[in-house]
Figure 1 (cartoon, rainbow, N blue to C red):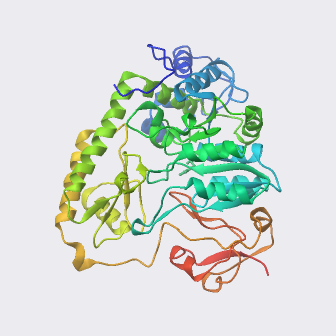
Figure 2 (figure 1 turned 30 degrees about the horizontal axis):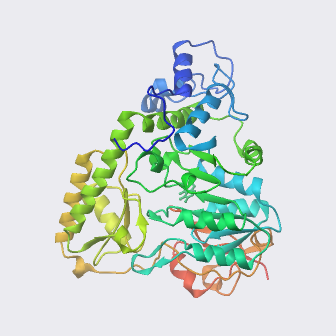
Figure 3 (figure 1 turned 180 degrees about the horizontal axis):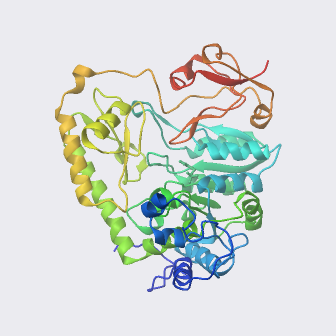
Amino acid sequence: MQNKLKNNKKTEIHAPIVEALKTAYDHPTYQFHIPGHTKGLGTLSDFRNLIGKKALKVDTTDEFDNLGTLNPATGPIKEAQELAAEAFGAKKTFFLLNGSTIGNLAIAMGLTKQGQKVIVNRNCHRSILTGLIISGAEPLWVLPEKFSDWGLWGNIKAEDVEKLLKENDNVSLVWITNPTYEGVVSDVKAIADICKKYDVPLIVDEAHGCLWNFNSKLPETSLNLGADIVVHSLHKTGGSMSQSSMLHISKNSKINAEDVERSLTLLHTTSPSLMLLGSLDASRANLQSSRGQRQLNRAIQNAKYLRSEIDKMEHIHQLKSDFGYKTDVTKIFIKADGLSGKRLESILEIDFGIEVESASDAGVLILSNIGNKRSDFEYLANCLHKIDEHDYKDIYYLENKKHMPMLTPIIKKNLREAYFSPKEIIPKERAVGRLSGEVVAECPPGISILLPGELITEEHMPYLTDYETIEVIKE
Ligand SMILES: Cc1ncc(COP(=O)(O)O)c(C=O)c1O
């Protein structure tokens, strides 16, 4: 069993929110409170039948039915957060609704302020930038390596972080994304050591790495490598429901957890969904259970199987860790000769009924998930073999549209100042030479193409084919 949970002494899996929801379900009360659908009766019956009566009966918010509260954490919610902290190896864990987005907003709001600088990788998620717009801190961009053949950003180099720390005063945080959306892993230990040397906290947006503490074949979680705060999108790969995430404060961090907690309280909904919170509790408990461990092992085995099949193909290639950097084996980025990623994505979808995680101009991203069966992967491998055998050179075409921005920004105005400057909307054709007034970021993966205050150049045009107009700062 590949369990690397060092702190998991419990043999029995306990999920306090799930158990409290079960008790509430088994002992219904006469309900004169929100949510007004009142256990599902006050909604469209087609909807009730689609998602199930039971699901609506447990759709409740905190404060009722002895379920505890989220802000501040009390009762089963508090206990579930403590169990999560133990499982992920953290000092303190906060459950997040509105995804890792709210975690990033709370970090920026709670730990940075106007006039300070934050070292951040250019390919970060737009929620980090939104956070910096709120706080007024200024990003200092660190540009990761570019894997030009794959149209992807690669790993962040520790020496680039150190150079920025050496050259700048008043840096409040180093904030990196690890792994990248496509699974490229940076040397977090080296970056953490440098942050310690300069006494600057390290935040790691590990949105795509929440499984790492549960299997020794996966990369090491940044919580064990010296990061102060780590954000995990449990809903992405951990098995919880969409929008549910976690924010962890590491055991040795000097960061005041209350600074983050205060911002979370202000930013969070005041009606947290117990279903989403319960799903976080359930996914943590599942990952600790022997069933969850088997599922994760299977996801790794499935990924290895698919990778070995792709190795046999002539025209389909995969991003691998033998190019001098580490990757997460469960994230499989492939490209096919003669096909753009978007074209490959449509062939998979239209001809074979397969939906992948995402596609860029270069390739497509496939996730090997804990919920996938081996037969899913056999089918996928079979379809990829068929595509590989079909010589697509005859229909080779390159789209005008690009999807994964890898541009070096030309910053002309402070992010927050630019965001709040007077703006106008102009046709895209007239935008070159003007300063962007908006955050332009295609989702997934939410990496920005342009930010407020950045100069718009010809290089941006292939990324903006879907835009007729663009918001720019008034001259
Ligand atoms: C690196 C990264 N961080 C944060 C987020 C935001 O996560 P969520 O969708 O959980 O709000 C994403 C979403 O794609 C992401 O890729």
